[in-house]
Image: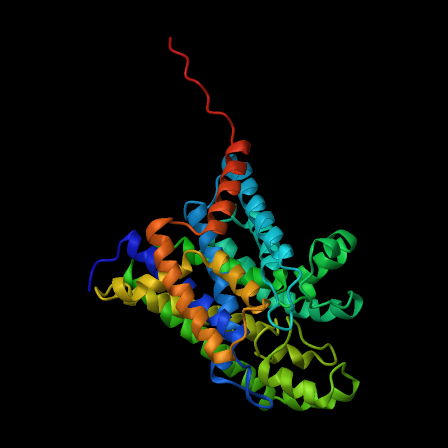
Length: 395
């Protein structure tokens, strides 16, 4: 074992992000079902969890950007400008991918743009208050969304571009915030978790162990609570009793229960809020996937202390340091004429490409191209808003 250093800590975080990237690519590239209504092994592992890990790590990244502490009021203006411009830049990239097919992959970047805006007031809060906001989101947003859904516009669940954003700005914002595949309001829970985690001393063994144990407990506990509610307290029976009045057919109901949803659940009965399937946006889903992200990060922080981790983590960390670039390239590849392979071969080629190119790029150019662009824009915005330093007058 070696002592953890800031570099080891950052490598473990990047490696965690790299695993999330490969997981998200697996969800998009590999088959979801091993047989009708039954998730494949890859989807059972990564479905919902990979995207949630990205969101938790986005919050952790915000904590790193803000010095791993509560932002002082006098520094709020520059920090808010930095986060707003970063979110805007990511949103623009996401809308530029609006031409892609949502059947292949729903682009997450426009939702991230809203998340960065939601993060602006959070950075002013102490860690206990950020955690409190996260708990309130988990407890309150799923039932709130359940009540509001019938009164809100039906989500398109498409990858919308600039034209749609210009023609239907309110409808798009509603979908990105409440009713879409990755609804930013409920996903603020992931952001809060990441900010709190990012403010911890991640180089300490006790913190890594606490993340691992707490994460596993949350993931297992959420699944157990959901199972008890559905199977012991009649939730599953109530869902099927309400099925004739639901917007879903019987096969679609089975698919949602076994494979997860598109960001929300039907409103035919409140018992839908007890399911824990991927992308259902329920409390069990949010708690369980947050726990999975915490456990993965804790595990890699512990493994990162081993000498061999420097070699093993290197390609994952390199890929994880430029996920925006690789995620964008992945979406473009899936929608191009170059994707002529079977799902398994296509995924394997993408994994090899990401790991090899990531290592080469990090060793030569450093930051990924899109990461460098977004960081440059955000840094310039922060400097532009920052007050001029006062000159000391000699007496």
